[in-house]
Image 1 (cartoon, rainbow, N blue to C red):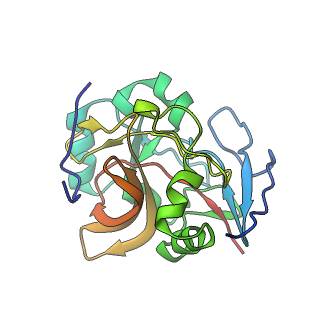
Image 2: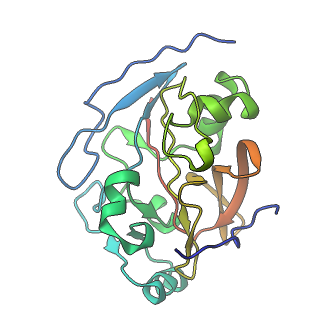
Length: 220
């Protein structure tokens, strides 16, 4: 497995939970996404796994590292599976660049959106802050070295890994990153992530050409 570390990193309340299967089209087989209500927000309880925009337009599927680098240079929306391996999609969903996240055709299903940085902050604050949210958001299995969470929130974060702008993969089993919809400067966008060595939900702007997971939130 390829490893990458060049991603811009430094080396209370009662939860109201409700799971359903009516969240919207979750994948290319038409499966409905499970959802969870946390505080005043409703989140999808799985990573997005669609290959088309809301209007049915295809999002380019990248299968080689050079092609992933090219779509970044051209600022084109794209997705891939971790390791360009379709079997990884069943476990983790797809990895999208930010050009797909920001496309006006809409990445999330009707009635849903990619969360803003403020949406992420509201979730983390409700869970008691970035340190408390760390365990409450992580799944109870699948993390390396038995570093599993309690999943008290029902968010069910899994260690999906990432892909950088050059098509190099890393962090599977040990880390995960989600996009926010907020641009930062002219090259980056805001993210939230779980990274080994930091036992809190981290926040940092990263390159728009990287591939990260997407969690949709219900529009109000």
